[in-house]
Length: 447
Image (cartoon, rainbow, N blue to C red; front, top):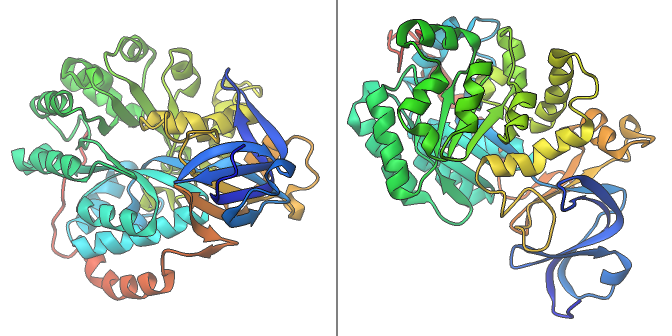
């Protein structure tokens, strides 16, 4: 080990590590050394005791995990948390959410993004994939608060070619550093085949991935078959989207017949699952995680927006994914706690095309790390550390959140965002934002 000064040393913790077979294991009484935003080494605490460092964090009694990744959300929609409750999907969109979203200003989006980033940092999320409007505002918030993000400016075909052009301009303008970008057509039922084909061509021309909703639920799949003769996944194939690197949100309507199309895709296909929303909407199916895993499709964990999910808690998504998969497959051995942690870390990073940068605590990876306190009564005693993390620990047990070696939260104190200020201004703006008397909608939900 070199004697140069480290920027940060976390010492005395237990570290979640991945071996060369991508199995997880834990190293106790360890130290993590960080320089220039990168993990330099993971070693024993005693070996790092004399290493000079600009900053030291005492990790005793805590577990160091790779920062969690929220693979699909609409961060600014935290402003709509709780305004559209106990409704079927069509009413949720048409009667509440899309009328309200027609009122959005860039300032509303910025305030929502600030509140969302605060929530995610406190829950141990270090990176999120966002698919929304006025995304310049979200990019500014990410830059200021220190998170990592994968951002796309959403568009519908009803906006004309200008929507697609804005999505491309945003993606080219903001990619770099902690922000990666994607083209973001909304979904096959709101974006025409012609626009999807043009999007695929732009993605290939500019080396950009695509992030969209597809086969969100079984009703969408059946409607697509009735109207177009193919499933939404079939639409993605015939328009060339599957020949790009594409992140598909939800996929609870993916059929067995879709699996060969996904397996044969020319690009890297990933799926994001957000099980809490599916339960809340009463959808009869969930993301077929096991079948997708068997054909090599990474499945990342997500929350969707807080207007449907009510939270941005990926910790909860991790536990629910494990439980829902056990229930739907009828197999208590699937997903195991270790498999759930794998989805929450390296698979979620891979789903965003960031598997070579984040998702594991290893030399050369970006220093996106969270420290989880397991000294509370609800996490003791620890017989199986993986099970304790997935099924007993909570997002509120995250004590410290670090991105690129920068501490964004220390001992539950946010260091880069002022929540009270955001909440105060957002409260003043809510009456205008929530008005639905104008009769407008940004789109029609009719699958």
